[in-house]
Length: 253
Image (cartoon, rainbow, N blue to C red; front, top):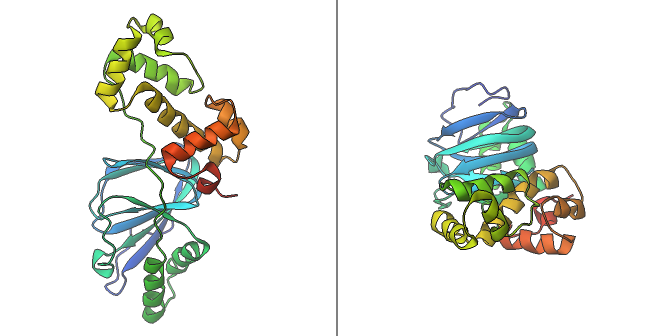
């Protein structure tokens, strides 16, 4: 893809093509798949990638390697600029990731993606850069922040309140009086329909709600209060437990 998102032909001597796409708030690409692997990253802003394997929110510090033919959907969380490097599978047989994998966008990786977007490279120069880019891919232990949906109308009503107000700290018994179900029934429904206890489900929801605030650069203390935590330390511990890294590792300043 070219800079304006229009498709351009693959040259037979090119293993990696780079595209850049402006994604104003609300822009979305419906579920699709590519015959190539895709290294998808945010040049600016926050991107949300969904697949059957999970949901990821990507700041500019992280990229997602999406294996060939894995269905996925992409949308912007606010105004964003997406960059994608499309990698011919035959060029990287040593990369055996079958599921989407988060990698760190190091300064070198970022520079290589920009370098390969040039159209004036010789074939030798391009081939050398492609090999270095593939060697620079470093997985990071970031977990997909997915929040399963609920089907039962009573449990779904609780979920909708929490999606709108993640800092709401009421207990299941208190919600039960509002939706017409006992705390025990609601607890059973959350486990049966999401595979998570209510506390685990709410924790995931709060971490997902926190990511856009963190991407904006808000202080951790402020984000913690917005999503229902009394202190930055308790929020950071929960973030690490759910996501796999700390907020400052996910969004380095």
